[in-house]
Length: 95
Image 1 (tube, rainbow, N blue to C red):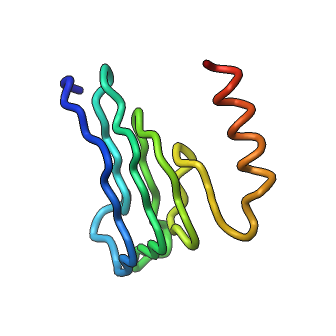
Image 2: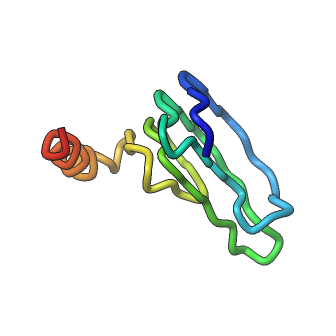
């Protein structure tokens, strides 16, 4: 929750089994969001099949398969055109 700025971080081609329920955790500063975060081709699971993702104040993109999904990142890929339009509308509305 401190004001540390994190930007331009990429996670690419990662797969495996998570030892914790939150397989992906982007816990960014409450005052300075993480920006330009990119996840591409991520496949993290748990032995019990219930891997989760946690996001706090992160902005960026996800490409291809990202499991578990992160709703805080914009989706790009072959099935994401409608979500991109909706996300752009939300971003423009909030600006």
